[in-house]
Image (tube, rainbow, N blue to C red; front, top):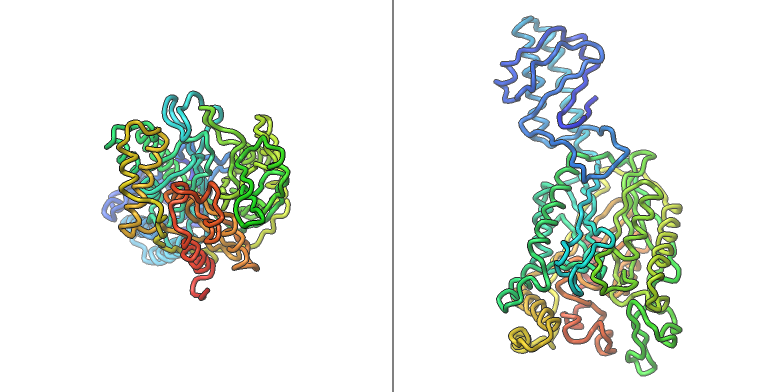
Length: 556
């Protein structure tokens, strides 16, 4: 049996004792390119031997959280398997130098072959590791609204690394308002390097809390060229946090656990989400409500089109849960603009469920661009905990409804689509530049102009947005961009009614709000100039792409 214990690879050969009775020749190990940590000791029943391969396994980083793990099955890549095989063969020939017994050579080589074959089989299994890092801003650094005066509750970047078919897959959720354009591509590149994969197999999503930072390296460069460096974005802070996430992922790569089952479930969340856009008899916006409203008439309007379910997908090693991923579509704010960084009610609910189960939880915000708590929120601060409790109750229902099924690496696949979105025609570069250069303009307008300019030039260069979908048995998890209207999420579920379909939005934050084609003539905040940076034709680009991601090879 092969086990990893601490920072070295521990090989326990209980069944090899009949073949080896003396110290193995150390120089032979060097000749085969394997560095022995110390002279290998004689084998006897229960003996263990430590070897240190040329690619040393680091001690687990304390930021990787899993209190249940003592040790885990040892699985390795092809290169490391070859090294282990060489070591075993070296042991055989070292023994042969001392004994010169052909019978024992044949027996030992056969056992070595079995061991390496076993490693090859284990390496193909489905595995997962959870990672987490602090994503809280420094005191004094910019939040999206104002400066950080306090970290009320820590922000985090957390997620999972999946190993199965092909290169590893990384899913990451960050307690920030948004990560866009070159900021998003940089996050994916850095995390891909840490995980030993490619950027197209990394999904990074913000949760969109508003008392939180944002990240857009290209927009910051534009602002710095106009004398506004460091006022909307803290690049130094962002890169330090990104580096800490990468470190957590590297450590997670040494903490992989086998996945034998996955479970999916859903629970209804009551009195949290409501549609922000109330359409009048003339087909235009009659009332609009954001995350909070003190107007009783507006709060009395119907809940509107929402997805009331929080969905979860859980990963198990036999009966033991490893990690739970949750998806729910709403703006995640109760109140904001306080200068106190916090993950708001979705973070409180996530952390509550994590404590209840003693299992790591990762929360993703779904297609909540036109959904918020406005119907049920009069802006009273005590509502934050109420919403957290209601969401946690729905998450508990989803957990209780979870149905487990066996799963293997053969059930895992990853699919991507690159799409170039149509830029909003009401964005005129000359006007945007004029706002940027106007020192008398409000800072908020100049910050927005920088983001507009980056997005416009990106569209002109045909720089695509990368969308992706994880397939795991009958489960589908979509990873999409921007502040999508909830209708995209509902349509995705209709595309595959016999599958479990979850959706994470707020990937690449560059496009801003993304409505339906008929949403734009209706008017309202979400589709006005500069808030949505895409044209109404965006629906005709995204809907087919979603269909292809959910069912590759099928026409839609």
